[in-house]
Amino acid sequence: MKLTCLSMGRGLYCPPCHMLELCGFRVLLECPLDLSALTVFAPVIPNSATDLIRAVPWYKTVKSLHLWDPSLIDFVLISTPYAMLGLPFLTRLRDFSGKIYATEAVVRIGCLMMEELVSMHAEYNQFYGPDERPGCPGWMEWEELEKLSLELRDIVMGKDGEELGSWMPLYSATDVKECMLKIHFLRYGEEACYNSTLILKSFSSGLEIGSSNWMINGPRRNFTYLSSSIFKSAHAMGFDYYSLRGNDLILFSDLSVEVMHDGPNDANGCKIYNETVVEDPLPYHISAVGANCASDQDLVKCLLENDEILEESDKIAFICSCVLDSLNEGGSVLIPIGRIGIVHFLLEKIWQYLELSNMMVPIFMISTISEEILASMNAMPEWLCEERQLKLFSGEPLFGHIELVKEKKLYLFPVLNSSKLSMIWQEPCC
Image (cartoon, rainbow, N blue to C red; front, top):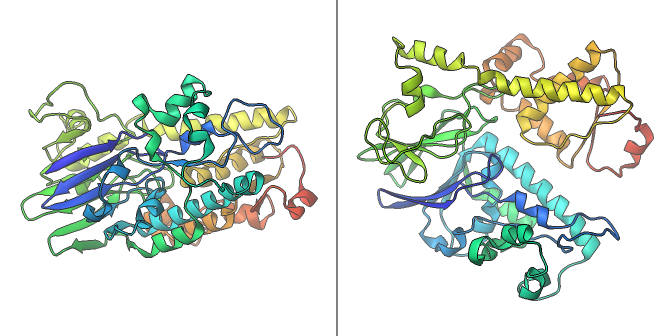
């Protein structure tokens, strides 16, 4: 087995990317975009004074991926919606013929995110007009790059200019549709067999609805790839701890919980490289936490009682308190959309806080995919946490936004300049 790190990632929205050579096959683990690099481009504001790049944005892909021959990639594993935003760049290459595997929920959400990205990009094209220059845009010329501040130049070029070749013009809506046709999506608990040699199966990572870790069973050993994970969520199915048992090798890639540790060797004498590889059925930190537990059930209970589980709820509560403070002062609140499940949870909690404070202010959700995103959550109950699934069996709405929309407390609009929005707009609002 050989593992090559193509990108260390930049957090949740740009996960790490690796090339794995296993049993004679070459596997690409994740294919994200670094959307944080878009901060080098100026927003679409006429006559604004800025040192940022004033041009139609290009998008930063995994810095080393373009150096690999796409025809040699046998298949791709995708763990989260954010990890598939760079896929159309790969699938539109004529030489790429590999298979792509992801859960049905990840594919559905990821497709919506890519469609919205294309829609948002169209605003830049309308403002600046199409770039008629062949090849690289003007802002990539050395004379223009020298005008950038050191901070912006580092984002664009990286150290020694090695990242300049990773910038590409955004894919089209047609590219997204063709990409979706090439993805083999797995339903909950479903297995896939690649080339009659490897068995692939996804397990819940707890991070987001449909987000998964992957187990690869080969002829001689079992391999598990762990993406960014959390043990328990207020909306998504929790981390599937039992899926890790009996594996010969585990690759920790980007866990949200603390699993990385320093030193050249772990407690079992296994060498630690850029990522932590543990040749033990138990992750290092789980072994340490559960050293005195009498059984697997005791260990899982110990993990789920960890104070880290409360962190997500505490952050939501802090945001809600800030919302109330702003509304009480007559101000409105603007909240950017992040993790889809968190958005649903946040909508519920904000309205609960508003009701307890006797503040009846409207909530507006502005996105070209707002209706589709909210509807998709109800179509994937098997990936929800146990508390949400119980609501399904009792006939209750899985998420509070359904009642909020019916009672006209939550309004969904595709764009901000909608005529219907201007008719009902009032402040303060969220």
